[in-house]
Image 1 (cartoon, rainbow, N blue to C red):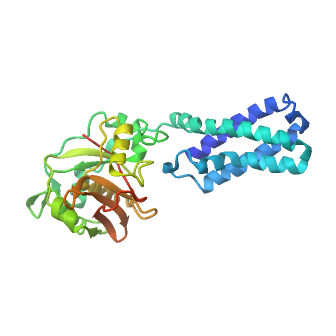
Image 2 (cartoon, one colour):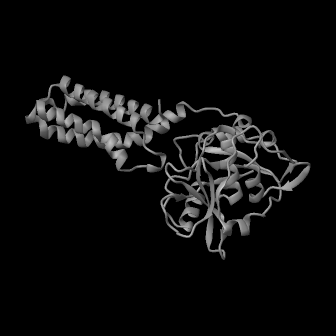
Image 3 (cartoon, rainbow, N blue to C red):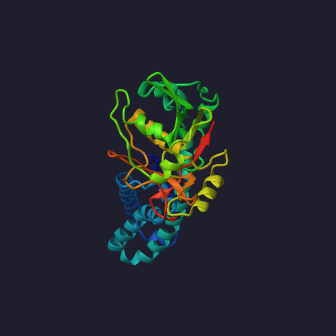
Amino acid sequence: MSLQLVSGLLANTGLGAVYQSIASKCSLLSKIPLKIQMRAFAYGAVVQGIFMYRCPPQESEGFSKRKAVEVLSPYLLIGGYIAICHRQAFKANIMSTAVLGTIQLAVSQLSPKIVAAMVQKDFDPKKLAFGKADWERFFGEVGEAPPIPENMAEILKARCPFNPRKQVGDTHMLVLIPKTITLGGEEKPFTLNLLQELIKKPKGKTTTTFYHYSEAVKEKLGKTSIQKSYWILMTKDVIPGSRNKTCCEQKQLVEKKGTDGYELPRAIEAAASILMHYFKTDEKLYGQDPWTFTRCQEKVKENQWPAAIGGFSGKGLYVNHVWIDEYYFRGVAAVRKF
């Protein structure tokens, strides 16, 4: 059962109790038999619950028209039901619908946070992470690597700064970015070009590739190596509200919400995180339903266009660059380094 549905049930239960206690005391509502009012309220709440369960809102929608529809739908049903059964009380219902709908719109913003606090989960960083053992399992030996930060369990348990209804462990990937990988007895620096080679020949796993590897990205970033191994937390999706915005707006959004040192990902960080998550879980993030890319820090093509990673499908991962500033499927991920 989703958090949205649980919070909706709690909100409707609480409002139903309040409604029952005040309906008989309101001069306008007292014209309508309380039994009919409560029956209508219950019918509307059930329909709302079904609506939220079958068509859950996307996290990026925020406080949108969809939110207003799902909250106000039971009250519109109440209005129709009472209008048919008691036409003389229709004016009274309009007033009660407006009042209760406004209250629940406010309650619906608070209740998910309350429920989330009640069902807070613990995360095991070792199970969540794609670390040294995972690199060696699928590809080859990595050089000296730092341990997972000691406070990582608490970080994963905390509220996500970009989606406070969830915890960091639900919304982020924890990935080791290695300095080197040993293949065939030769230690090689970890680069985008090497990553492209690795994912074509993983051990015991279905291969994938860079479906499109932009010449501009390959020329400027393909051989850029890592100075030392480090850990990153990267969001599993572009952060809410970052689509169809300029690079400057996206950077400001990351810095404003990610106050714990978050920044835009580098191209190799984004590509490695998306691909390693796939090898560990079989889940293709930053995919094509909907089309999703994250812009990156680096700019190519005469330092004008940012690198963009995403569109992951069975054909592979797009390692591209952006030539149009604003576009819906180009949002931005957020990365925190350790």
